[in-house]
Length: 362
Image (cartoon, rainbow, N blue to C red; front, top):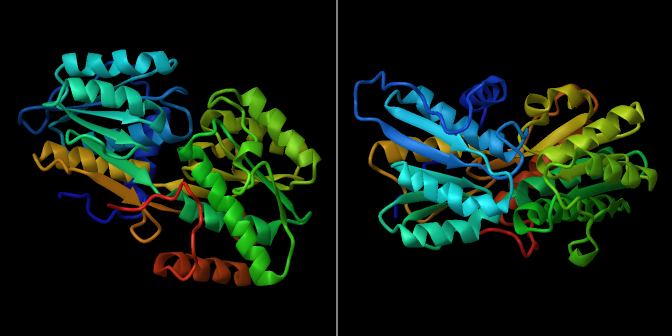
C-alpha cells in the first residue's frame, strides 16, 4: 500500500499557499493556464464543501494545498467548484468526471455518501476525500486524528482560564467536528486530574454528546456569535468554536467583549487565516490539510497516487497545536513544559485517548 510520506510542519509552503488562497481572485471552474514544464497537463480538481474557498477553515486550507502543488509542479493544473449546499455534491463530483480531471478531491466528511455514489459509478476515475476513510479502491482517504491536538488545546485552555470555566461548540454534530470537541473536553479533564483543579467545560461533554451545543451551520456567523456570547455569559473566558466560517462569529464576540474573552481556533492557525482576530487566539488546533493535499496531488501527478488512507497525527505532524502568537509571553513556561509532556504522552500511548471518534491508521 502506498502512503503519503511523513508531513513536514505547515510553515513555509503551507502558510504561503494559504495566503495565495485567501488573497487570490481565482473563480470557480478555472485552472492554471498552460504547463510551464512542457509536459502533459495533470488536471487536479476539487469539489468544495459549503462555506466557499475563503472560509478561513478547511475549504481554504485544502485549496491552498492544490495551489501549492501547482506552484511546485508547473505541469499540474488545478481548479475548484463550490457547493452551495449538500444537493450539489453529486452533480459537482460528476461534472468533474465529465471534464476529464485526472484526480478529484472532495472536501469534507459530509460528502462521503456522494463520493461513494460517484466513485462507484466511475471505478476507473481517481478520487480523494478529506475527512473520510477510504471505502473504495479508487478513493484515497485523508483523515486527521484531531482529538490528539484538541486534547492539547483543552489542556491549554484549562491552564489559562481565569474563571475556571471554558467552552466549545460546533457547526454540526458530525464526527469531524465532535472529534475536536472530545479532545478539548478530555484535555480539560486531564488538566484537572494532574493539577487538582475543577475547570468546567460548557457546550460539550464526551459522555453526553446529545447535550452538545451546535450552530447547525458552518457559515452562520450570527449564530456563532450568539452561541459564544451565551457561553461567555455563563462564565467561559476561553472558547473553542469548531464551525468553519461560522466560527468567525466567535471572533466578533471576543472583540465585543473587550479583552474578557479569548479563543482557540481550529483547522488552521487563526492568526494566519483570521488575522483580524489574532489578538484573541491563544492558540489553534490545526490539521495539516495544506501539506497533505499538496503531497497527494504531487504524488498523483508523478503517477504514484497513494491508495488506502492517510491519518494525520501528532507523531507525523498531520495535526498539532499552533504557536501562541500574541500570547507567547502570557503562557507560563511551566504550562508550556506540561503541554510538551502531554504531547509526548499521547504519542507514546501513556496518555489514553477515549474519544469514540478517534481515528486509527489501518
